[in-house]
Structure formats: structure tokens, C-alpha cells
Length: 118
Image: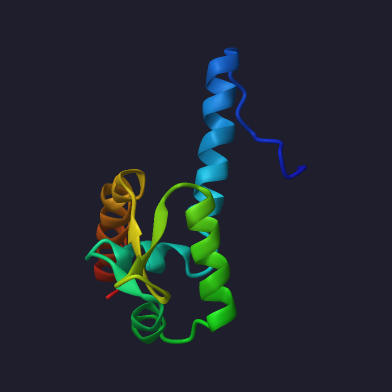
């Protein structure tokens, strides 16, 4: 299957579009570290160093890349603090905050799955 192909066999063009958007969204959120970055920002703005400290194992390069992707999608904004361009924090936009229910549902599903495994 090609990257842009789906297995959605709907007769409606609208449903085909929704299916493509769904797959793209799942792939975006499912990128390595993306979900945990969003999760960390749900608790409020964080500086880069706070995010790096709270996400063990993520490299500075990858954290920077993911934050830029989130900014590009309009889910995160980067704000300068105290009139300094060197001191910034990242926070979710209203669109980014809408992902809270998605992240919460995923965490609930994980907990249920873990209980079944035990």
C-alpha cells in the first residue's frame, strides 16, 4: 500500500477525505515522542530544559524537531519570556489543548490494557 493510500472503501468523497485525515492525524500524533510532548504541555507552559528533563531519553535535536512540527501545525506556540529571545517557553494553543481528550483516552486505554495483561 502506498503511503497516501488507505484501506477505506467508502462511496462518499467526504468519507474518503475524513479517512485520509484520520490516518494522517494518527501518524502525526504517533511520531516518536510527540504524544509525551503534548502530554507534558497539557499541564501548562514549559521551557525547553523542563521538557527535556521530564522526557527521559529524548535528544535535544529530536525535541527541537518535534516542537517545530507542533508549531507548524498550530498546536504549540513559542513565547519569549522577560523580553529575552534566549528565554522561551512552549505552550499549547487552543487547538493543541483540544488534544487533551485524545491523550487522556489513550492513557485510559493503556491502563485498561495493562490491567488485562496482569
